[in-house]
Amino acid sequence: MIWMWFIMMAAGMPLFLTMGSSCLVYLMANGEILLSIPQRLTASANSFPLLAAPFFMLTGMAMNTAGITKRIYDFAECLAGRFRGGLAHVNVIGSVIFAGMSGSAVADAAGLGTIEIKAMTDEGYPRPFSAAVTAASATIGPIIPPSVPLLIYGVLADVSIGRLFAGGFIPGFLMAGALMVMIRWMAYRRGFGAHPAPTFREFVIKTRKSFLSLMTPVILFGGMMVGVFTPTEAAFIAASYALVLGVFVYREISWRDLPRLFLDTVETNAVVLMLVMTASLMGWVLARAQVPQQLGTFILGTTRNPLIILLMINIFLLIVGCFMEALAAMIILVPVFMPIIQSVGIDPVHFGLVMTLNLMIGTLTPPVGIVLFVVSRVANLPFEVVTKATAPFLIPLIAVLILITVFPPLVLWLPNLIFG
Image (tube, rainbow, N blue to C red; front, side, top):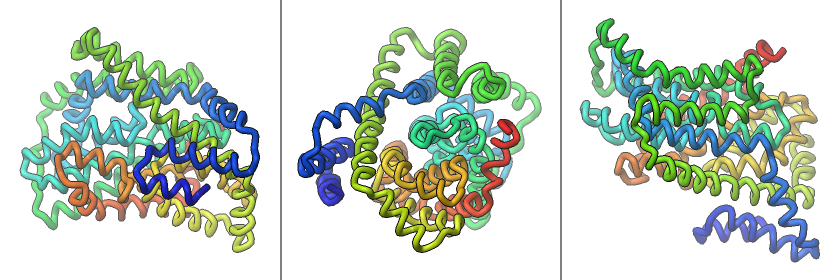
């Protein structure tokens, strides 16, 4: 089954089709009842928390269309433009703010990336460097809540999504800080300048224009923390709020735009849902083939030290991220790894953030780095050029990954403080 899956992927077939076909052949070869296939596919899609995914996608698309991303960028420029390498820092700050709204690295790269890369190249920054900063900062999106990958992990691992979302704040800010340290070092080496500090009046004007947009993460996380709505309901609130801003407040979304927005959301979510369904089927088949048990026996036979096990899983996931789309890898591997981490006492919230950050780094590594493909298209640069320019930014991201792996309180302190 695994060899067939790899061969079909190498042939360029869609990922969900390769997983579904290889599972079908395996089950037929083992004389299984094929009625189990539609049962498993529909069971994996029949999940209330998964309803949040299309609404978060709609939120990101609405914000891009409504000009909210431009307002976020202008506000971030007021905050960070004065530092050396100013617009590169603005790029990172903009991604941190946008992360609290969309929960998607691709949405960040495609939405803010268009504005950020143009602004940086107009200021004289090399286009490959601009694209690299945009790609690296986009990985913050799925770490700071809301987050589609963390949402799906929570469903698969049966872990509190609220705790996962709370656990993402400190790692997300660490990622931003590490990237800004790298940018500052590169700015000195390459002689990048800074913007003059904004006047108080300019700061007030840009803050006022972006205030309603900046309230989105406050409403989302505040509502979840005080128990007004669940994470799934928060996704609907976010999408509704973005549409109200775009249609009635900023008036940059016309009624004619709405069908296209909804259709784009449906198409994007259909791809994600097909991945969820077929990857869930593959995870079930692997479980029937005793793969998790065999892997667990091998790892636990080597060591029972939780830190060493996490480091081994990190290396494995960094390799997997080079060859597999992040959500598909998560859906297949979470059922495989959960028995192992539970047997050695690793907190599932901690593991969820470690795994998600691993797979987000994978979106920046060839040959299947989806964020690299998106940014290369936005920047109108060859994939190889963007890949080479992004490579130095893997260093601070991997440093943060090691940090949260070795020091679990960086992830768990805030969830324990909020939820007890």
